[in-house]
Image (tube, chains in turn purple, orange):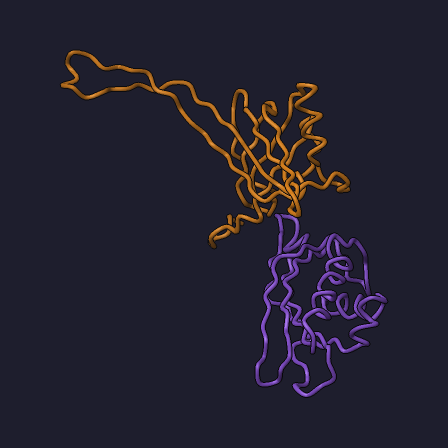
Length: 129
Length: 144
């Protein structure tokens, strides 16, 4: 479900869409695909429930993997991602996002392909009931 | 019918409160509930006790406490706001602790909310907790 939010925000936020142009994929991206692109996946979901319901809030950990040709391009993208997602409060395609936090960032350089990659960890609070 | 022979699921154990002993509301969004019943003892040790403490029965008392997630608009349920209101006005509360399922045991009595607290950090769930001091008899019943 969180994938709908990520895809929507990338496609409908001009700063992100100008760079990624829809190249936002779940779980896997083409190795030889046009860059930059983003691959996202959910790394864990922790339901916060009570005696009334299995979950009132889902704590969803998401990893965004950005792959590009230049370091500066990805650094700018990370700032745009933080601006776009962190502390967002919005319902997108029936997914009620109460908030989002920035949790971590790691960087990698692929020598063989001469590409940069940045992994961004976000934590979403999704309202369930 | 008798109570279930399976180990009780703690999720089914709820706290219900009311002010007239006839109508009750379940405290909403609770994540934990505890009931504690104690009996004090009287020291009955004598020179003949051979160094061992001897006791006799004393006063019985009971307390109840709970924790939950804060939601102030929760139709049909008692909210943290209700609990604070009862504590603030020092209202005598009728309280029940147990499963609502038919034939299951529950405990009931009256008393007062004696403590209410709420916690709110950053990017986390806002929570509440309360303590309740029972007065007089704690009664064990069976849900019908």
